[in-house]
Each structure stands twice: as structure tokens, then as C-alpha cells.
Image (cartoon, rainbow, N blue to C red; front, side, top):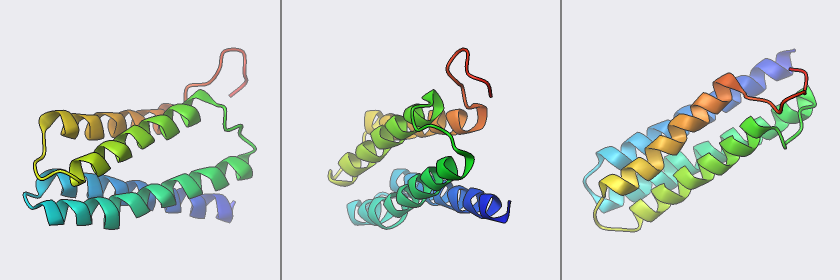
Length: 122
């Protein structure tokens, strides 16, 4: 039980780091600061989140094919790739900001509500 709580804490820390890097990348005006936010904060946060999430699936014996896991992985990857693309350009765009922020919001929704395949016990 202690391991489970520690993994949840680690995953939460990863999500906070990723969210902080995302906000930092969207809020800064300098391309160098945007790169720092993405590569030094958001990217490590995503690695921590994915690692802790994977370890949680092992701990809870949950399949990686659950829709909320597949959706979370896919949407977080879209968000991360959008952040990296935004960091590689001189200017931010609204489209780039939306492509980074909206998927992250839906990742949080999936993490909280955890939709499951029909007919599978929760």
C-alpha cells in the first residue's frame, strides 16, 4: 500500500512538472526560455509521469490496453510534440498553444474518470 501511494505521489509530481513546463512555455516571450521550459521541465515531467504510470499498472495489474491509458499516452504525446514544435520556432501561435494545452486537459480528464471497455469490471 505504501508503494502504491508513493507511485501516485510520483505520478502527481510528474504531472505538476509537465503542467508547469507547459505553462512556462506558453507564458514566456523568449525562445530560449521556451526551450528551457519544454526541455528542462515539461519533458522530464512527462518521463516521470509515464514511468510512474507504468509502475502503477504493474502494481494494480491493469492492462496497458485500457482506453484511459491508451488515450492518456496518445494525448500526452500529442501535447509534448506540440510543445517541442513550439519550442523550435521563434514565435508562439494560438494553434500551437491549443495543440499543447487541450490534449493535456483531456489527459487529466482520462486520469480522473478512467473510462473502461464495456463489459469489463471496474
